[in-house]
Length: 104
Image (cartoon, rainbow, N blue to C red; front, side, top):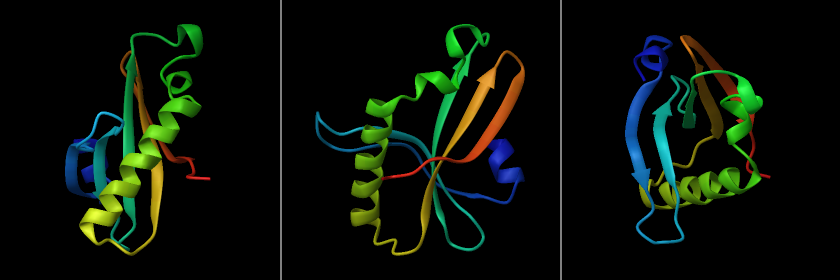
């Protein structure tokens, strides 16, 4: 999270959970200086074997993230733009994927 804040993003929520069994969790919700809400999934793997950290964010996980983001948007009143990013940590390397996937 410190890395993203150093890039100019402001923390809005951490480990946001939808209050139901079917709901998901968003690791970080941040805001860009232009007001864009940024929903961030953080994945860590010790190596890039088996596709690495990025390969673990499949279609089912993306659906859960979108559902949780929709819940946050409804409850927060945020009416601006939003996007889904991923922070991938493999070994000691960190990669920030802006717009890793979309809600469609």
